[in-house]
Length: 165
Image (cartoon, rainbow, N blue to C red; front, top):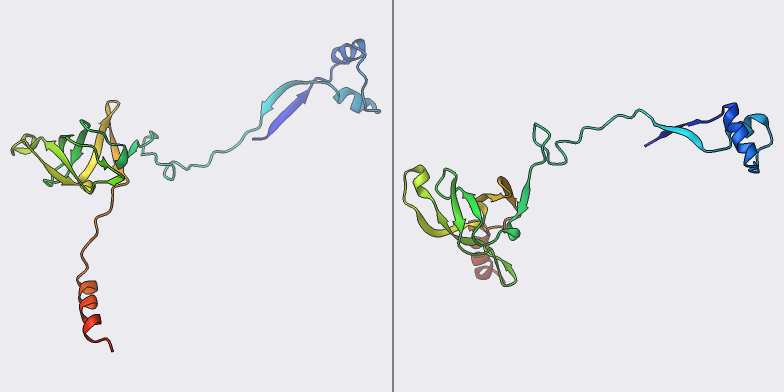
């Protein structure tokens, strides 16, 4: 950020400088007036670049709170979408097991919110959408990827063995 310096060039300032017998390196009278501490520093007018969308802000300039899937803990309150409609539930186990992340996680879901039964069961990691932390719902990111079955790759692997010469 650029600063504009306004020098104290009044005669009283010059008297104070000469009274303290400070040696000035300048030789001209204009340079002698400019030697000394600045009187006040004024910040130059600058413009701000709107990076609100790029930095993860929503429409009302509040930062979207996100949390990594690996940072979830046992007994966290979560919102999941395994029944279609988002419902709350409680994690019964931590997603970090051993060295890696679990692709399915055990939760106790509150199905009574949408007219179903409350049950414990497994849900896929990508169905955990939000977690309740510090009194607000934070979006969960960084889910481990599900490996999708590719029928074309499967057929290619079968036929590659039969027709190879």
